[in-house]
Length: 337
Image 1 (cartoon, one colour):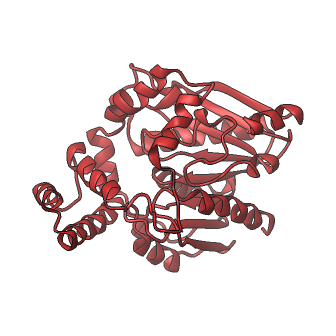
Image 2: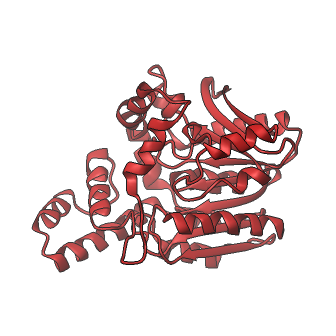
């Protein structure tokens, strides 16, 4: 892991540890080539998908962004959220698996980082599910954050699922895919308040290219490579992976969380952000609607600046080339503030 060697050679920070958030011990990874560099908290997707997270020590390509250049300029903090990864605990109360508790955990972690690194504000970046938390954190607590970076930003979960469902039906008809038509017709249109139907929607999004975009020019190593980072992680054991994708997934998608998804609507609830905001979205993403994001962006009042960057060769999980561009653009945007 060249990145880890560079951090060690530079006398930087590469530390996995636990902090108590919401009464629960939770795991974080702190990485920086230079001590004293600005702090950036990164919120992973899912819920229940701890990438990027504690397993990302020394890893450059992190799902929808790269870190090799970021870690030279920032103190990156990755967090395995409640119910997943190194944070998974069998005694986690199912009643605590709701958006407000995750937001409370994130505020506690933010304040812990502000105190530890003696700074009034930190940078906040989030991907996919993490953007539901990130956007609300930036909205509620602008005094704690220098800027917000939203990657595959969700603005209305239920409506995004509805658009994805309609697209899948259209694709299935075009392809005369009878199995897809049968299964999609059986689950009906979103919103979904049970995880089985939601998982079926996601299955067909993967099969039909709504998650990962490939063509003759764009290459993508796919999910097996991403999961291999968990297997190779010096901080993960096999039980952590099993806990994430078996027990943790079941815990993460409980009835209250699914109800929170159905009720989440930033289009109606968030009209203004008092921090600089930079958004990145794959042009071919059918899991998280770009159409809804464009509507949100056009309406959003952001006195300190806003930017929306479209990635031509990506769907929900960005191509390695596009994720490298995201890293470059993030740095340029923050430097320009």
